[in-house]
Length: 112
Image 1 (cartoon, rainbow, N blue to C red):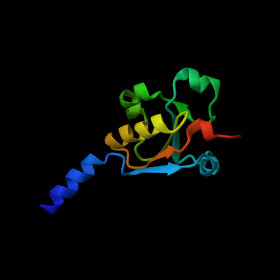
Image 2 (image 1 turned 120 degrees about the vertical axis):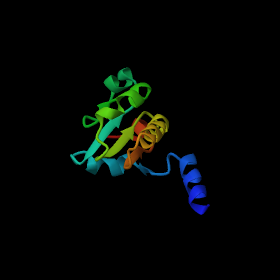
Image 3 (image 1 turned 180 degrees about the vertical axis):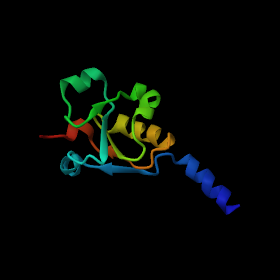
């Protein structure tokens, strides 16, 4: 019975395995090829300003395109403020990605 309760609670918290990272903590990781970097903002937002290592994959299409990402790499996700990327992390987590990190504050807190 305890196992069933644990599994039920685990299913109710899909974002439980999602880490948070500040943009200052993110900077030294940008050259790490063992990680993949996803920007879930719209193409217009991405075109206006983005971090070179990030691939644009808008939140609206993430669920359909998640299969193009590696589940073996840590996935770091960013948006404008951190809200859409948090949702994107939950989507990836629900699709079986076990190492997902949200960029806290998003591009609003990014400084070169």
